[in-house]
Amino acid sequence: MMNISNSKDFIRSLDLSPPFEELYELGDRLGAILVNQKGDYEQHVYVRGPILYALISKLKPKTVLEFGTAGGYSALCMARAMVDNNIDGKIFTIDRLSMDFPQTRNVKDNSGNISTIKSSNNEHWPKVASKELIEKIIPITGYTGQALNKIDLPKIEFSYIDAAHHYEGVKHDFYSLLNVSAKKFDVLFDDYINRPFFGITKFVDEEIKNNFDVTLIQTDEIYISSTEKQNHGMIWFSTETAKKPLSEIFPHSNVENFLKKYRRYEKYVVTNRHKLNTKIPYFTNVKFKFWKKSS
Image (cartoon, rainbow, N blue to C red; front, side):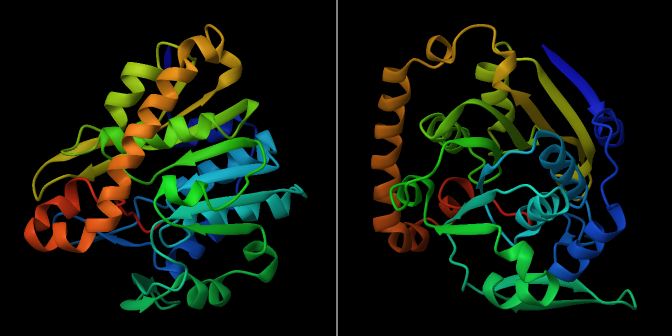
């Protein structure tokens, strides 16, 4: 079953009032402003901050796993929720780019002027967030399969999935979560949208929405070309609403077979990335790149 709600009504349903202005200001200072397909600046990712803040405040997870750190907006918003609500927890966040990699940021100053800079998360975060927030976050560098082999994670109670956006990548991240999750956990998928090379909608429609009570949070409309807009949303569900045991919905043998196959592919990509991108640059945008929002 799929319930549909806009972002404001969804947050209101949780009986919470996130600090919208402060979270949006964080987005400005962090450089989370995007350039859309028309070449205009837009802040469409910003509403994800209050949604994540509200869910963390409501659910109070002590262990969070984020797939796709990007510029850090989502991780820092979740950290802010933990600090404000005295949650003794940690946010583990995975990205193939290291915390020292210089990222392009469109930073808005107090006068409303936007400047484009390059700055790594390690360099930029201390300029816009307190030490208390940053210490809530544990970055893990690598493709998901690689990264999860680097660390023994505690049982995960909440996950935000926003890394590889092609179908197999989304399925891999969710199946990877199953192996490190608590008995009961919540998941938020970003980018539920009909867009070329995006597989979130396909995965949710095939494997999630008929097995759980799912909420589609309609966040905004975005340009997917210079002239065409699409509705854009997020998917939230709790495994408490499962129609049958998780072991029946996602049989262990199926999960492990898929992960094994995908990680062989991932290892090949990592080993041959430069060669593939040189020969077939188009691959970079389709399969071998974590699709980035400056989150």
